[in-house]
Length: 218
Image: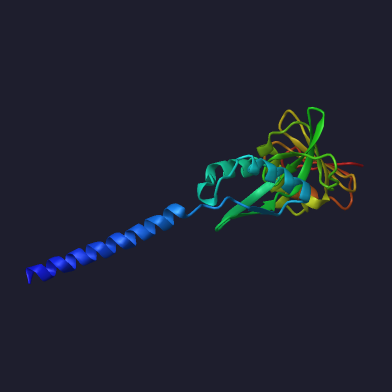
């Protein structure tokens, strides 16, 4: 009885050795395929080609060794990207889906015109022709988004704004597409703007800088 058990153990051990050897041979002979395709969607041809070249400079060996940190840093450093997703399609492809930022204003910085994206980044692009408001002055990006939020929550549409004027005192003036000027205060801006809007149809100059008062053109 003891001899039979010993024989069975030897047989099992022999079979395990053979199977293990086969698996090891197959694993050692398996070559991880290089990344062949990088598919980027959401950008136009020129911007897609630029991003693709930067990613290819990582010298990607295979899909298992793609650095998430490198990809994330490269994609997020692109000022055109609002948000994105990356999908590894085995065995040898990467799919990068990008939502492009929306341009919401223009500004002159050091003699160059930049677009401001909804992602809060500045985009240098000379051949865009977006009809967006121009910002005069030098506000911080958060100061611009603050006034835009107030406009978006008011009774006037942001699409009616032609220019925004920012002053060193941190105060804003708005110029509408019909050339109406609205002068806003430093505080209680939302209340002042909604009060000023009540006079839009009859006046081209509305001064709402004084609390609870509106000064109009003659």
